[in-house]
Image (cartoon, rainbow, N blue to C red; front, side):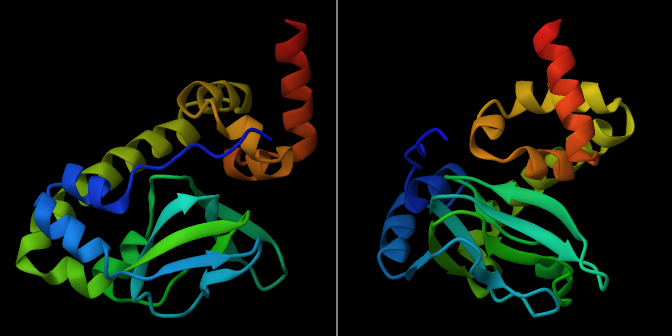
Length: 191
């Protein structure tokens, strides 16, 4: 495993997303920081989402757990990213995914009520634009590429993922079995 990179402060993140710098600094001094152990839950599947979580250190993930015990990993969140289920935020519906710490995790809890304030509208628009671009990219990633092409694309787009996630986690995200991923990696390394 490689060490965690240093994330920009939440205030810097919000400022880049369009929030006034003075307002960002003032707000961030009041928001609570949480430290979680690997496996601890930030938001239970089926619960109402009341906050987003800005990842300062560690890795979080969004997973759906089926009735028969299978897990479907939707997303990983690394340092400098906002851990947020957009559909639950926009519709107010219960979370279809569970947000949980994949590693030891330090986050800042950001109440979603803040995003309704007029000063946060530029941040909301920036978050929605960012998410729409990400979703378009992921849809193309899953629909237009073979499993090997998906792995190569993942390594190109997110070069830190293979060093920080297990082969099982990567395979789950790509939508293949760990055995298939192992074969793909062997072919690439031999090639």
